[in-house]
Image (cartoon, rainbow, N blue to C red; front, side, top):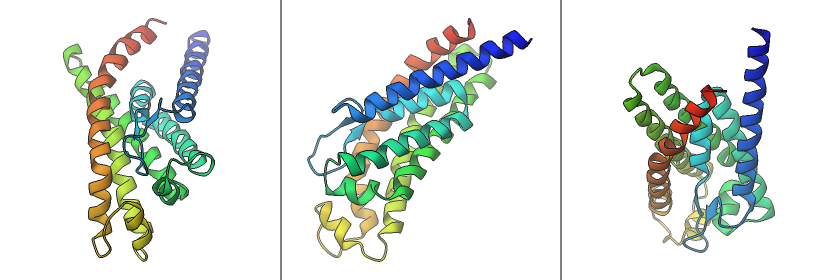
Length: 207
């Protein structure tokens, strides 16, 4: 029994180390984890896919911790290598950089756990697809809501950085600017997560 527990701990550590390495490569190699479509606006990110796969494998607590690591890389990038003023205004704020990523990992892990409760193999990919969708959607929605909260008293600076006219609602501006990215990320993560997670989970169970 001890050997079995030790093997599982070793496997969990190995999986975590591999995924953290993938996350760091995505975060810091240009156009791997962050793809800039419109200069000045936040880049489209493929990292929610990595978060969803890991959270589906390890559960909500590990997913939240992994999301926090993602948030820390976002905070570091905003100071070390920002891709525009909007990135500086949003992600140099620890609240906006960390909390949405942490919540995305937790929500993805909860969705991924549904696969363990469903006996039919044909239903499990639906749980993984939901995990991918939530990893992206929760992150995008919380970034928008927290940005609106943080800049509630002085929205002009962020609104102008997003290319909006003065007097428009900041919340509407944020949804307009970031929702397209969020939808693309959610569709991508939702489609690809089950294709990776389902065979990977079967493989790990054989270990």
